[in-house]
Structure formats: C-alpha cells, structure tokens
Length: 312
Image 1 (cartoon, helix red, strand yellow):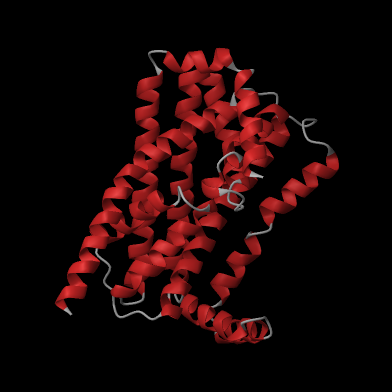
Image 2 (cartoon, helix red, strand yellow; image 1 turned 45 degrees about the vertical axis):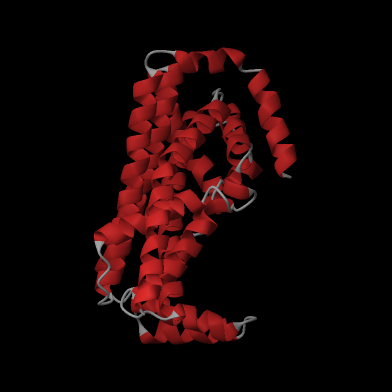
C-alpha cells in the first residue's frame, strides 16, 4: 500500500512541474518559516494541555518536561502511522511523574487523544459546512452524507468523556467495557480517564487548547499555500486542510507517508482547487525539520533515564 501511494504521489508530482518551480519564489522562504512557527506553537499547546490535565489530577508535570516529551513524540511520529509513536512516547515517559501506574498513564493518553480528535472533528465539521455552502455540487449527495457522518462520529465520544465524572455514567461504561475482549484492561483505562476528567471546566479548556492547536496547523498549511499560489489559495486551504488532517488521523502508513498527500490532492481537486499534494508535501518537510528538535529532546530524555537508573 505504501509503494502504491508513493507511486501515485510521484506520478502526480510529474504533472505539477510548474507548481514545484514556484517553490523557489522569494515569498516561499518566509512562508515556510511562519509555517514552522505554527507547528511549534501547536506542540507547545499540546504540552500545555498535558500539564493542565496532570495538574488537575494532582500530578506535578513541569512544563519543560512536557515540552520535551511532546517534541520527542513528534520525532517518533516519523516512524509510525497517525500519532501512534507520540502516544507510545508519552506512555513511556509519563510514568516517572507522580508514581503513576499503567492505567493512569494509559487513561491520560487515551483521554488526550480523544480530546485532540474531538477538536479536529469540530474544525472538520465547520470546514465541511462552509465548503458545502460555497461548492454545493462538488460532492454528490450520498458521498456528502457519508463525509458528514464521518466528521460527526467522534462527537458522541465527547459526551461520554464528559459523563465519566458521574458515577452512573462511569458504572454503565465500565460494565460495557467489561464485556469486550480484554475487558479488564478497558475498565482500567476508563478508570484512568476518569481520574483526569472529573471537572467539566478543565476538560472544556483542554478541548479548546486542542482546537486551537489544530487551528495553528491549518494556519501553517495556509502559509505554504499562500507562498505557492497567493491569497485565494490560502483561503481555500483554510477550508480544505481540516478535512485532510481529519482523514489523515486514520493510521495507514508510517507517518502516513503518501496517504496524507493523496487525500490532500483528492480533496483539493473535489472542490476545484489545485496543488494540494504539493502543499502537504511541503508541510511534511516542515514537520520533519521541526521534528529534529524532537530528536534532541528524545536524546535528552534518554540521558535523563540513564542517569536515574544509575542513581537507583
């Protein structure tokens, strides 16, 4: 599948030689720099969200350490699909704070993942609604309904997460989880999620941070679109890229290489736009460049782990 997607990307790039040549324009360098700054801001918001949830549960996670873990996860995301490496990085390094068990850390990671998905789903739903108004005939009726249902699908998770703070809702969800394969592990995860979701105000603030972080990535992609094609393309990118990010949250290939670019090209074409594949290919290059900071953070965390092992 990876080879097929990469083959499609290469073939499509061959037909967009004029677009690639425009990457050498004088406005591309500042556009890429601003795009990288948007990605860094997104990572800082993710780190802040982790600190917020941990502090709410009485666990002191220093912001500096949260930033290191976040950027280390960004670097690890180059190796596995759709943020899985980021979650694994947090599972490894969060356990050293506040003597957290596996269930507690797992609950935090799952909760944070759901919050991020809910924020992205909300943006994708708003973008899809706006695009339907501007391009009413772009997506056929049945496909339009399927896309709408897809963007709505994560929203019930928000109701469940908010309801976990109530004993009746938690008991009901726990009984359902107990009937699943590995039901005991699922119940422990729910208990861990509840530890970090007792206050609705904290959850809503964390959800707002997640949505703001996704807005930063959308702005970063829009900067690249502006550098390539100008203001009109940047405005179109603001509407289309949330749908691309939503689709690329599905794990397909390592770092979703090829998959994200293919979806971007298809989405842009559906709404009568062009250059989506090149835009997201440049966004991937920006992400890989920023992830080099994550490589340094990862090495720093490994050094800290080695020092603590020697001390113990």
